[in-house]
Image (cartoon, rainbow, N blue to C red; front, side, top):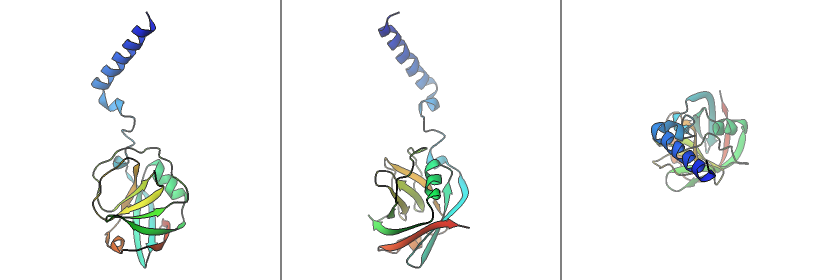
Length: 156
């Protein structure tokens, strides 16, 4: 058998496996941040006399984020739907992948810029966005516009 025949056979078998077993074709499946279960890890974002509590999800990026706490940063508005704060270092991107069901109250990490995001209005998934967790309670504190000192710490 020539190497060309072997190559064609490998491609054909791989293609058939993808068609017959689509879940096996997606390496991110089962690690999709949207499918992660909440953990008992709680964090508190404090700025401008406001406190926002969130529950982190069970994914490598969220665990990496929690390992950095406590943090003293600056939070600011970006666009008309999110507050952002730049982390002192980038988080691991293990377990990242596309997700759906985006909604206000999501806590995310944007890998290309290295910032944590608190969404307070509708948004759409974009490449590089990793969901870390979910805000508990309302989003009202995040509607306060401006730039403020931010303290992020574990909440009990």
